[in-house]
Length: 91
Length: 415
Image (cartoon, rainbow over all chains, first blue to last red; front, top):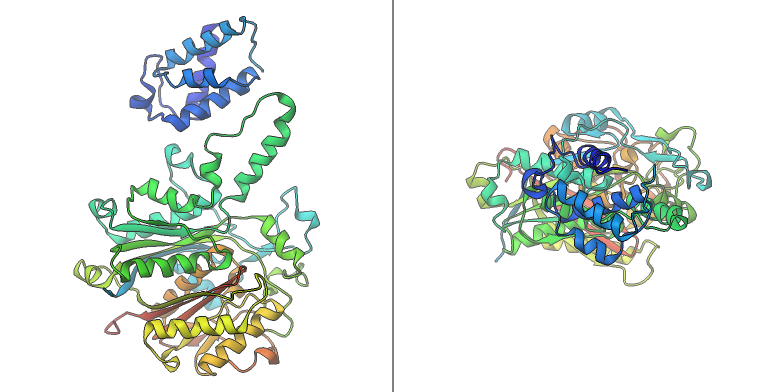
């Protein structure tokens, strides 16, 4: 899955499940969309469902530094690279 | 410090309707809210009782995603009635978040629907190698979910009491809210309770042989409080809220005063957790009168707990007779709604407020032939046009908890 495809998937989740309106890659999640720590945990569980594996405690703590949608994609790139880039999202 | 406490706003979602008009009409026309038990794909086939006091009409909720994310079904009921009460109150935003407004609200056990989802997820995902329990599942299911979703939604910063004593949950909430204001700790309290559609509660009472089973094909004929042919309670769902305010402040701001809470009692039987206890219940009724500083003959009507269980109705009848004789009219309002569990106290109080306003006492539905063991009371077999001055609302719970609220009609020059 390319970064663009992943971005599309994340944007769909943010619109459908988190009711974001017109999200853009550089939007600040909290300031522009009211995204809070509870939402972050909820998003991580959706990411786990996408990839079909559990994130480690360290990986989850790193996610707390995410501020924008682009940050989410960077974060996912890091996760995938850390696991040998062999992770294929579940359908 | 002892201050007077009045009710200035109320709202209820019940099996016989949502809001004053629908509920009053149902009480006047003998409309039952008991329906066939819905299939939950889990327990229904194992339950003998196939009836439920059901909220089967659509409710137009208007909660944002940010508000919804911490709410299970029980909190939807709670927040909706709290929203109604606050909208009608005219209280300022400054007062609502001043710390002088608190919340006393509860449910029997949070949200069993969400708890069930957690376990379903747990067992289904065990083979998949990762957990997907939602981050907010605890917030949606915890026992104080109703109270704190209300504080969160409206920015309320005062005290929080989250009572959870089964059938006395909301009557305790109202009583404790009344005491908060009476003794000066808060100036206003949103009080009440909610319980969602849940078959586990039915299964529990069914297992104890306490649920009605003889009218599965004619749900509207059960429960039958005080009737010779009663055969048990019917579990129900719903939510209700009242706004309590300190009397002088309410009067000063011109709030409509629906009734005054003049007395409250709460005690425990101090022993068995299931069986009704004559001494404990009788003491509760007397303690409420003492708290109000009134005599028994000043009470016009009694809204009995009256679940229609075999022993519960007899013991309650004996307690009423011992304290009141046969002077006040007695009605069992669960005959309309079923037993709405944690929310029954507030729903029955609100029904009494509506009856006070409209000037009638609703009869006990399905009371066709009074059980002689419940016979020494002044039952209400048909709609009675009557100005209610003071009403008692009685509720008793598993765990041996008993409550009684005494409310005085404050309409016109009565206050």
